[in-house]
Amino acid sequence: MTGPALLQARRVARWYGRGSALVRAVDEIDLEVPAGQTLAIMGPSGCGKSTLLHLLGGLQRPTDGEIWLAEHRIDTMSERALARLRRRHIGFVFQSFHLMDELTAVENVELAALLAGQSPRRARQRALHLLDRVGLADRAKHLPSALSGGQRQRVAIARALSNEPLIVLADEPTGNLDSAATLEVLRLFEDLRTAGQTLVVVTHDARIAAIADRMISMRDGSFADDSRFTTSAATGAGTGTVYGGWR
Image 1 (cartoon, one colour):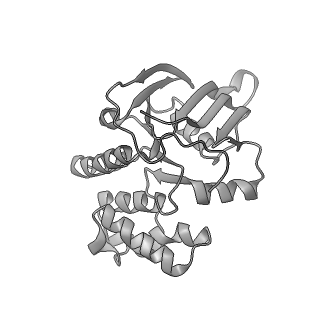
Image 2 (cartoon, rainbow, N blue to C red):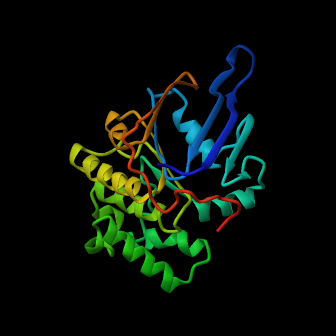
């Protein structure tokens, strides 16, 4: 059982170019993601799924339509307010990890909390706890260059969780990983789903669907299919919460 709608997109579009060169990367999509749901958005390269994720996370502005998170419209926010929103309430996981090469694993994880105004002591404690949660307590002082691809992605997942986000958005999180590392990341996402963390994952990897409550297929900027699985176990702390304001 999942909670009320946490994330909503209403006729959201992202177009590039004009005239005969117009590209409808995202074409008037409607979407609701309840609190506690794990949603997989699948489709071939170029179908618009990564663009949609960037719109939902406030990394890009839509050409048209509305995007709401926790009953607050985000597509009309100022850049400053949007940056604050991303730091405090959205966790991002990217295919290329986007770790700071000169920072250790624990420093990468705590950075988001420090930018959001947490004290250094609390940020460090939280970072160490999350590294332990993803199985990397013994790699806390290692630089990214000393970690495998799977370990770097687990650090990135820990970083995404550092501020206890309302939602985690993942863009091809297994795209650069081998089979063994992919299984490690999938197990982490399954743990998050079971704990009730709201997740939206865009991917071309069918194995993601095995840990999702719902799967949407995209083609040419639009939704082609929306499958809801009745075996959902996502019943975490977010369930039943009405999000009337920021934490």
